Picture 1 (cartoon, rainbow, N blue to C red):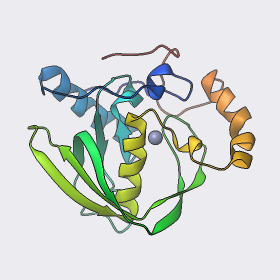
Picture 2 (cartoon, protein in one colour; picture 1 turned 30 degrees about the vertical axis):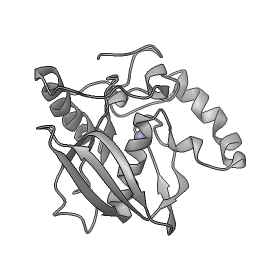
Picture 3 (cartoon, helix red, strand yellow; picture 1 turned 120 degrees about the horizontal axis):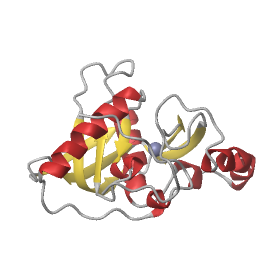
Picture 4 (cartoon, rainbow, N blue to C red; picture 1 turned 60 degrees about the vertical axis):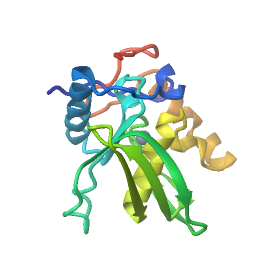
Length: 187
Ligand code: ZN
């Protein structure tokens, strides 16, 4: 396994809709293992494949480091689809490994139902709420080319602009390896 560089806002792959996965070959198996290692190394609780430069519909989640979720199992979701959302929404402060050191309140549905394929390409469905629903919606958005900073109000966007430009130009200190250029892609 290896720790991969994480793409940052401004990188082209983060704005692409990720490609469907039709076969789990050795490359994909290694990618998933590397995504877990990269996420844990950066103290993240979720990571999408395009955040490590892979244009694939895959994300990993491990919320067991969060208080009250110690028993949560790590999950890998391939070709995920959100098939239901609660009407009830909640606001929660989100961050993103691709947007280091920026946190903002984002309003999202409290519960979702998500259908996906596991590492054996078997179809699974999970009903998730609270933190798990939050992380899954954030990672699902990544695979559509959407970042949480797209979901905040205009005033917040304005306030964030300068800092996002600094990140795009790699003029920030980050505690984990980041991509070398806006064109970075491994798969
Ligand atoms: Zn993110």
